[in-house]
Length: 396
Length: 103
Image 1 (spheres, each protein chain N blue to C red):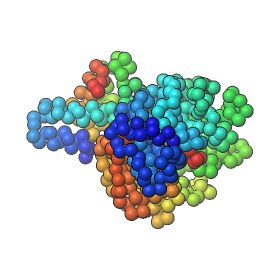
Image 2 (image 1 turned 90 degrees about the vertical axis):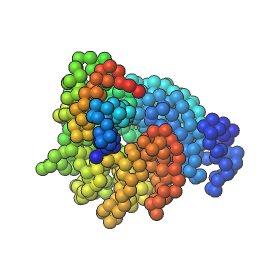
Image 3 (image 1 turned 180 degrees about the vertical axis):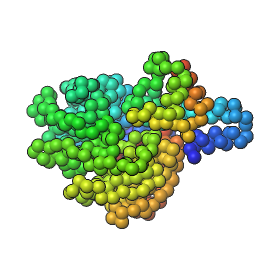
Image 4 (image 1 turned 180 degrees about the horizontal axis):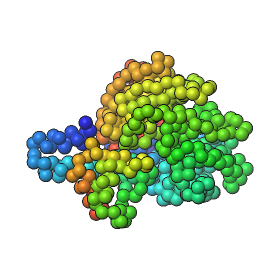
């Protein structure tokens, strides 16, 4: 690393420099595998953090509207690509703590993904809908793929994830479709379209083996599923009718599938409009369990080993986190970190979890095994926490 | 009970109700920017939900905006906020949205 610039960045916000801490490798150079970013959603800034000493290295400002933000990391774990609500895509150098490049690639964006070779950065957009493909090096546009479905409508794109082989899969909220775009041959992708997958998909994700893509459906009870390992994949429904016989409650924050609870051959996802998590057997694709929860779940985040799933909740019950033990099949811990818990991120091997508590302007760090709080870090209206180790994971 | 309702309830116990609405405005502003903002964007320019900027609402009067806030739009992700917001809260939010929502 360029240590001097991180020191300068740290000095700017009045923090102690990231001095020699246990486990840090060297004084003048550093790796980037223990770095991460915290989105400060109201101020268009991010914190660059490191998990070894649990400290903030720098604040980087000028990233635009981060009220809904997502990030992916380059294979070298040096660069973060941050997608903002305003269509901005910002490439941040985590070691030098500076913006390398920033482009406005659309009018309204929701997230993105990076190809397996690290060369194509793809943004999923609301306005105009569709995806844009940019060169991950210099952020120049390489392709613009509108999302116009069989119903003739231009769609918002959600649930975009990368697949091995320069491919991306995503859902069309306004068209009830799922598309796979294959850029392995050229920047004019081969598109595989699945139609009538279910009404109004609101998010999607893929399992860690890049096999099962699921999209949550807002317009009906259930999820769409595609087995991407099949030579001729088809879209089917899973969790069909999980609300049947009861009212779906009003949803004050849409559930997110990022980080979902994959554990061995089962998958735990947040239900929409119920105080429940739903469990799917990935061998049979049948629902095998439901867990009653404190509120409507937003994120069901699997500990990296899959044994536990840590869950946060929608407004107005969003001060609480619950821990689901997947082996025992029940909630084993409930606690209230503070007002507006927006996101959770495990350290790469799951020893610690970082929790953003937006209205306390704080990141809380818990020891996962003892479930005790071991540190906190001030942050302005923090939302997403993303560690650089994500660079080497298939699922998002 | 939501934080907001708690704030309103607390205010109500010590002040006349007309003042209570005024006192709760910082909480309402925060609610709109942060929680409505999860679908409509913190700048309210739209996201999964529609834009709530004055231009986008020009065709609707404050009453209908207020009704949408309280009762939602069935068949869409817009939920009813009745129970979390009072009619006075919703009316105030609707008027402010049409005028340009405060920061």
